[in-house]
Image (cartoon, rainbow, N blue to C red; front, side, top):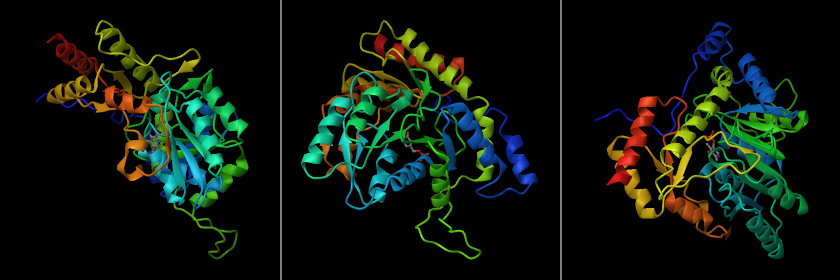
Length: 374
Ligand SMILES: *Cc1c(COP(=O)(O)O)cnc(C)c1O
């Protein structure tokens, strides 16, 4: 058996270990310390736009805190892009609120502005104005920021920007992670940079960051004893893994460049295969191409290609199964136009890591060419 080629695996730079070593040498083995502050500063500097960053245990915990900070509670409704990973939607349920799923559009595969407005109007007509909108830059492609902001502003609903897959992506020159009222990042093992597991909340003000850190560190009031007037969470990032993050920040742009070049290679290699198409960047959009995705002509082609790759020990995966199709969310109200269902049927994610070698990429390209040659 040839060695396994993964979809997206961790890629260390060698700059991580000195930070971890320093944490050991100085005994900062805690969910606070110089690496946590340093990593937050690195992220703030990278994101720019005067944003504040709170490093947290995961992207999921950042989403949960976002909802709490926006006052989402039992019985509320929150709009969420249907085509996404379940972690975008689960925290809505943690709060006892109801997710309202909205379909995608073809230009970016993300939340559709028209469907969003239809959903908001209908929810208001039914008696509840949604408390927040969770919009996602899927696979690194920015959502239609201007169009989505316009709808959100018209109804005065805050946006939580799920930027878990889009660190390093830009929209009209501005970094993803700086568009929402609140934004979240993820450093899980498969993301463009990783701390093994981790995430961050991006806020517009220092007061919001302080509130997030307060909630993330068990909501201790200012007193010599343990005093609590809020429910707290244990969601802060450890100083050890923040050291991995500091090392990873030194190579973020080179990871973006490599993932973009993987995508370009696939696009060039398959340009004569009529059954394969790609998602192009609309003007002003810059995707980190976290995952390289292709669309096939049918569900059958997609599945048989996936199995053909599996035989070659090459991992590939259908695009995210929309939340409105997930058994756990089958009762959630959904506003659909068929786009995310079709993307799920015809789409396939190919190996996309920044650590893929030329030999590995050759194997993927040959396997796909072979599949279409017969
Ligand atoms: C990975 C991911 C998350 C969750 O981040 P974790 O750090 O794994 O908790 C949320 N939303 C999207 C779109 C993701 O891809």
